[in-house]
Length: 136
Image (tube, rainbow, N blue to C red; front, side, top):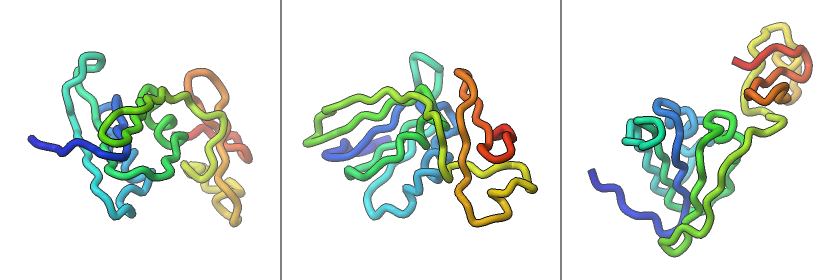
């Protein structure tokens, strides 16, 4: 398999196997008009297999989305075909309009307001700000 190197863009690495498409969809990478490569089930020395996403342009990435789905992922920033920065992600304290409340009676599902979740522990548990329902 041959995937071209990136001149300017990102490599999102160490995504848990099977979560690459979720990251792709939640970041809305399908809306981009550049090359995006999703590599699934790549060999990994840490976790046996992983997913990787390569984006061949510099865009405004929502790192909170990536950190929520894949807290151990890394984001490599590539400029002029050289990695200039490697970001380790930390789970965000708050998520806004990234996930939806699973409680159908919650006000955020019945009114035109933001879906806001707060992190409630160090294990990555998020609860709805309005009804305190745990995110799935």
